[in-house]
Length: 219
Image (cartoon, rainbow, N blue to C red):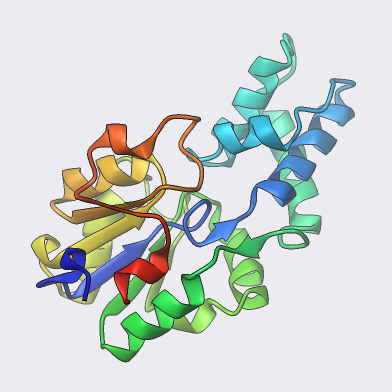
C-alpha cells in the first residue's frame, strides 16, 4: 500500500486532468464558441493550461487570450455549455492506471468520491461512457455547492457525507487548486505529475505525495 493511503478511509478524486484527459472535447467547444464570435481558435495546447477553475473561468480565459473586448462572458459561456453538451465525451479518454487504481481501492473498502469543478450536468454522460459511475459514493460538480475548489467546502462536505474525519481523507488531483483545497480541508494530498496545472510543475504546490500514475497508489 502506498504511504499516502496509511490511515485513510476516504479518497476524493478530481476528474479533469486526474482521471480523464478531457482537453480535446473542451478545446473543441471553446473553439466553436470563439468561432461564434468571429474569433480565432485557441487550440488544445492553450486550453490545457486554462482548465481547472470551472467552465466559466475557462471561457473567460479564452476570451481574454483572444482580446475579445465587448463580448459578454456570460453569453459566451452559455454558448460554450451548449457546444460542450453536444459532445462531452467524444475524444475524452481515461489516463493509464485509473481503472486499476479505482478497482483496487474499491476492493480494499475505501470510500471513493468525486469532486470536480466541472458543471454537474455533464458528469453522468462522461462517467457512464467511461465506465466510472459505479465507483463513487458521492459526485460533486463545480455548481453543486456554493463554493468550489480551491475552497475546502466541497471536501468538507464529502467528509461529512461519508461520516469520516478530514484527517482520514485523501485528495487526489492534478492542480494547485486540488492541493490547496485538500490542505485547507485538513486532508492528505496526492498530486499526479500529468494533467492540467496552468503550465506549472505541480510539485511547486507542495502536495504530500507525487505520483506519475494512479496505479502507483495500489501497486
